[in-house]
Length: 388
Image (cartoon, rainbow, N blue to C red; front, top):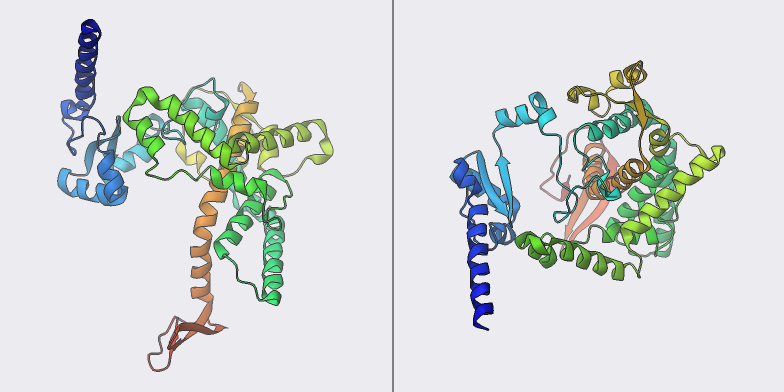
C-alpha cells in the first residue's frame, strides 16, 4: 500500500510539472496573455464572460497579439490588421490548415470524417477547394434560381394554409426548413419533405449536430484532460444518437449522401447540374507550388474560365469518395446552419429597405397596422404612429 501511495504521489508530481510546462509555452516565447489556471487554462473565464467580452478585455490589457489556453489547447489571438493581412493574403500558404469542426476531434488522413474542405491540410485542401469554388460563381447561382423559387413557393403555400386556419407558428422553424430544403435541392438535387413533414428526420438530425452548447461539460472535460478526449467524443456521440432515436445523425446524413453518389454513378439519367455532380465529374491538377488564394475565391469568373487550362499537361486525379462525401456533408451543415440564422436578419433588412411598416401604439403594446411599399428613406412620425 505504501509503495502504491508513493508511486501515485510521484505520478501526480510529474503530471503537475508537465502541466506547468505546457501552460508556460507562451511565457517562454515572450507572448503576453492572461495567466492560465493549472487545471483549466483560461476556459473558465471564457465560459463566465463569453469569448467576445474576454477577447476585448484581453486585447486592451495585453495588446493585439496574445496567447491564452482553451483548456490545455494553446490559442494565439491576433487582432493586428497588418499581421492579419499577411496571414490571409501574403503568407496564406503557410496558414491554410484549419481547426477541426469538433473542438475535441483531431485531423487524421485515415478518417473519412476528416476529408472535408474545412479540415484537409495543404495540397489536399487546395484540390477540394478548387472544385468547390466554380460552383459559387454568379452564372451557377442563377441556374439555381428555379429550385430556390420552388422552395420559397412551398413556404408561402404553408403561410397561406396557416393564415386561413388562423394558426400561430414559430417563424424560426420555417426558416430552418426552407434553408435545408434549398440546400438539398441545389447542392444534391434531392427532393425532401422537410417543409411539409413536421417530424422530418433530416431536419432533426441536422439540428442535433449543432445541439452542443458552448459551455458543454463533456467538451470542458475533454479540453481540460486531453487523455479523456476520445472518451468524451464517444459520450457526445451516444447522447445525440439517443436523441435521434438510436441513429447517429452524422452517419445517417452521410449514408444519404453516399446513396445519392451511388445512384448518380449507376444511373446516368439521375445526373444533375449541381455541386455533388461537379465533385463527382471534376479532376484536379496535382502540383507542388504554393496556393494562389486569389484563384480560390468564390465568384471568381476568371478562375472558372481557366479551370480546364490548369489541368492541361499536368498529372490529374479525381476526388476520392471520402473527400466528396465529407465536403458535401459540410456544405449541407454549413449552408443550413449559417443561412437559417442569417435569413431572419436578411428578411428584416429587405423589409426595411422596401416597405414602410406602420405600428400603432396601444395600451397593450405595439400593433402592426399596415405595410406599404416605399422607396424613400425611412421616416419617423412621432405624433400618432411609428413609421419604420
